[in-house]
Image 1 (cartoon, protein in one colour):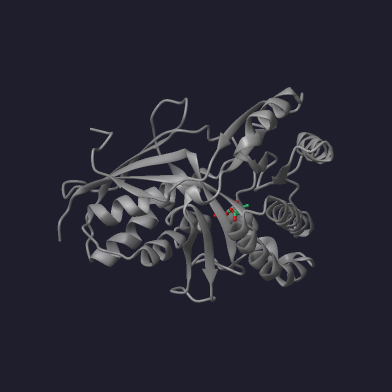
Image 2: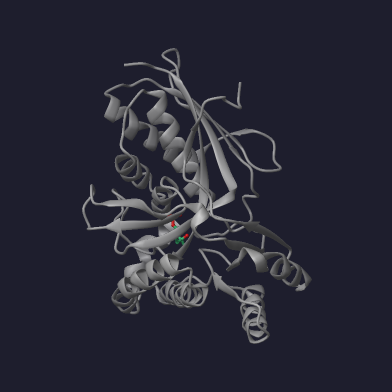
Length: 336
Ligand code: PMV
């Protein structure tokens, strides 16, 4: 078994149809399928170096705009647990040095854990010389606990399939990034860090009386989203995005205990988007586990939407993304 080093770059992704609710927390098995787009400008770069001289894994994080710092507590435990899953496949106990850099603000409401666990898993697999198919890599990445990370493995527009088994819950590409000039303009209305992690709320989702309703609706939305992507139908994709985000947040707001992710800024952006659509400028909202709003639109309209969003008093800054590739191994390693 070769003990080596590898670097991977992985994108964050935005879900058009959300993963919300975990059926088996140990395996990170979701109740429902989901659909997403990889983001071309929100990336995590991770180097994993296995070293027989180490007694423990060492993990250093370099978040955007912050000094390097060693990971501690729960984030460190999650990285070690994922390295353990990769080590188990290679039948080794060897410890690793991990260095991870984010190029986007971690306070932007963009799921940084998806990019982080996709990059970590891919780099660790390569550093141990394991050969996995894309499907096997997506399954292994899903088990990290950040389920949506499995969607950052394949390229472009992605479908996380789920047959409720460990081996049958993985993501596949349904179209490459160049298939559709779509944009995700993130309108940041609150740069604060959220107090309830999505991991906790995935476990609580099934306590909502509306969760069963959501599950009944989701398979229809999966088909509509796939058709909208195939046909480049922004109106249909936007309707699906908005309906699914509202459904996810209804479940969160009616779980026991409930979580209210939205704030006044979230609603201000929603109302502005609806007004602008009446004027012929087409942007559609989706919202993850936080108050910030992802505006899905044609790339041709992204600059005008960014301009208008930045003019809203509730919006602190915006980040525009197009569709991007999935995870890739970097040959020329950036962290010497
Ligand atoms: O993969 P997690 O545990 O970070 O959960 C992701 C949850 C949402 O971002 C709200 C939805 C999704 O499908 O990305």
